[in-house]
Length: 114
Length: 237
Image (cartoon, rainbow over all chains, first blue to last red; front, side, top):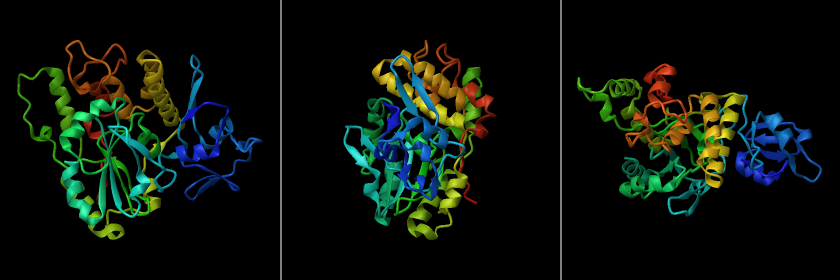
């Protein structure tokens, strides 16, 4: 996810990464990581502390000042079997929320033109 | 191909969703229009699926049950035998193309069995032998060391810079992603395909080692142990 600041809004972080900020720590599915140091004073998350705790790389472009937080690491590609929020657009730009298919089985296929 | 499967499975409560990993949606448009899908057909410009689901190549798929829980992790998703597999390679084929086709033919896959497994799951749901528990799904997903997290962040930042500052700003970051996660073919092929060869070859697969990245599909496949290691083949036994 793009980082625009040294802190991250917890709701945005949850939507982008699936990690929710709870009293017991940062949680994804059944996994909770205690991370008191990740809580900044104003209810925001401290990006550097979150990154260190969850094994998320931060890569920065010095010219533009833009930084990106990578996914959690140190285990498997999937931390949880719960599908994260997935909001993508179709080729004409119409939004689609994968959660709208709850109640049906879904075969999600990645392909590419290249 | 996916539309045909969707039409077959839709009455059984199963929806096919296709997602094109394409920085430029217009590159995907002709394929989508030709397929005329009645299922959701989406675009993932910055390869979000790599980060969130562990996609590293195409075609790959995950299976999701009615509650939004994965019952199979990201794995190769071929449902038709490739024509390349049975094709004779003519004697006069140029050496590089011959080598490429030889590696491509080694890519493992059991498309008919995989398709049958999908249909079995569509019919039986959780009772299908091919539907895995959440623990198995996590265990069967690929390992993710910190280098892969850095590769994902580098690739995503490259995509952002490609759109805001131009391709030259993106290239060093994409190169870094390629080095850090060599088994991720979506990072490489997405970047390669933005370069054109002197001959103007249409597919990045046939490109020689380019000046920009110093890598190519054939050389990287060979370096990673050959076509037999190219795909994450579903274990259906």
